[in-house]
Length: 156
Image (cartoon, rainbow, N blue to C red):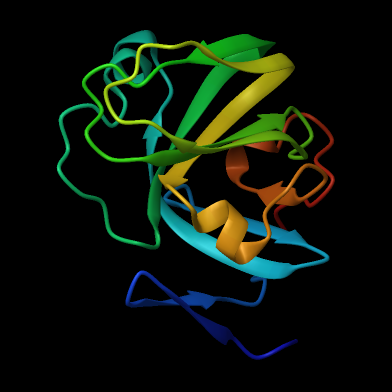
């Protein structure tokens, strides 16, 4: 297993962690040719939670995010209404593969951000982190939300 490595982003240190075998509902792991990363997440898995998302928050810790989980794969679009911090939106299919990354969504902007078809989950993290870490389409995501869909990186 590779040791963790450190990145500096906006004056804050980020640590990209090696993969762990057991999945946690409150953590999302990502990996790709760029390495790996882990985020502590809040889950938004019902319509009311998804409607509110990260609205009205002045900040979010660097290694944190929100995972929006849908009942089935579908076309989704987001906007930044009442969202005060820039975010990266990472769109994920039912097998846990990143299909699209929208970087640095503009706070308070109501322009639609389409995720495409077949989206089961969307991970929101602080704006700019996907570029710093290298998260891109094709990256794999591990979380229990994908367990029933033949995930490419399953929980053990």
